[in-house]
Length: 320
Image 1 (tube, rainbow, N blue to C red):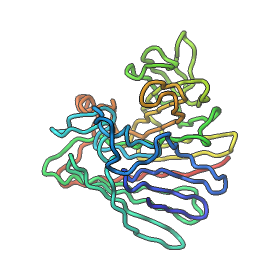
Image 2: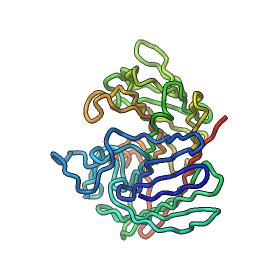
Image 3: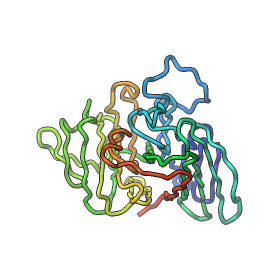
Image 4: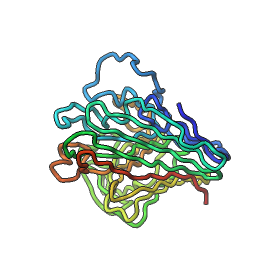
């Protein structure tokens, strides 16, 4: 683990698994916004009853915030390499080095080489004194000799005590929002694919559903939706009961979509069995969450041989 902290917040990174962010503690309020799954982080090589068809993501998933790369969503054939659910970057261990550790700022660089695709990834986490937030300066380098298509995303899952009934997601303007047919399932407030303007969609029996509002655990709700045509590359999630919110911003030219995962106790099949209470609001580069389908619709990103692509994501807590 790597721990970065100042007088306002504490950030913990799981170096042994994807350089996932597993804790973002607001010290004054003693609230960590990240979801901590019923599955704890386990050491590499932890035995499995049987290799999962979709790969290792679910077995290793303990909540928190992952980077998804070079694909996400469905397992896929990536130029002949078999890559599992949500890609490679969030599965492997990462190296870490300290760039600066001063009174003013603490900064570390995390790096990893992918195994089944020719990429080197870097994430630089920086946290300044008196700040309620931090930045992640990311880069992807194609170490191969061919141009390649890829997908890139972030998978931050928020949980209790930050997430509870009454929490809302705030987006600028009224972007397009839709529920894909493939996400319709048990305890879903929708019985078919629907589209509309944020945040209201037509649910079962014509009942309006506000997808910006978090449901309680006892309501047993589960749905997924996607927002596109974003006015700004940012969102806010606010808890009025505790007067605490999170604000995330990014380059919407790289991440033009938001995948929203509302898991409010309603997914009662494997692997969740009704135990998961979390909200994930995920900046994505491409749709749908399937590499081959995204290729066919021209939705992937492209990187040349030897090329390096960079971007930055920022996170901060706030109160009103």
